[in-house]
Image (cartoon, rainbow, N blue to C red; front, side):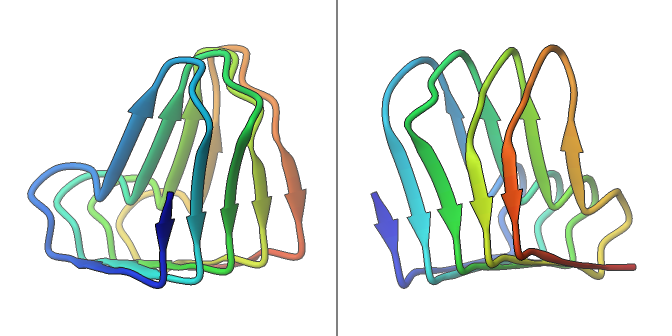
Length: 102
């Protein structure tokens, strides 16, 4: 669980998680990183990324892969060099009330 945290200027992913474990990232800021803001891979369905500002990354703001099925809700994503939210590799997610800007 990561709540009300600020992660700024990470050289790689701000948050990276693989596997089936539960993950909650809520009400924080993940900004200005050298790669992806939030990366979730694996078959874990018990994942929520909610109420975060994910901005200014060199790659995708939020990247979901390998069959992961997170809830992405009320996030503001953008201002980076890559796409805002990127789902691939069999990933499926529920996207609710997010704001994605260029």
